[in-house]
Image (cartoon, rainbow, N blue to C red):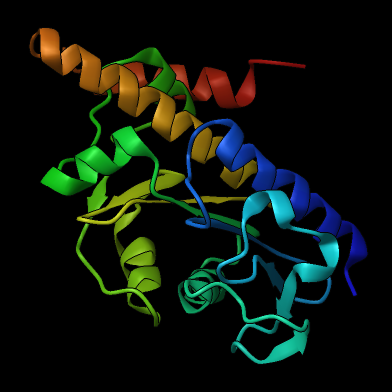
Length: 213
């Protein structure tokens, strides 16, 4: 089932180690198929370089196994909670990327101090509450606290990103770590200057509606 989506997820998973967003088997990507409402997600504990389309696990929105021989990611119930409560989201990514996780460790959001943050996120990247792994708790924090951002840092944990598709969620994860590194470096020099809210809105609108082809 969903052969093309399985293949796409293998390719997208390889982007995570490529951009240094994960190590070993940590992190995951999932995608919802809008036509069937089924979700394809990475299996638990499989190294990225070993992933194949047939390894991907397909579940319904209640977590029932539809197809697959392996156990789904331990984050599957949080992914499903997000999909059930955000009809606009068809891709979810979780990483423990280094610089963003440093903000998570101290419970701080990433402020809008670069035009790249205004462009991609349109606001601070929030730091959400702490929640334990294994059930829907993390998904609830994401839904309740992400606001209009496509990314959220989870206190003492890592990063969750969302998108209209899996590629969009992966892009948000890549951009989160990129700006987290820049902001962390800036904080070593001094106090970064926050961009005024009205300029953030203009930058974000331009990026979303004018920039590109």
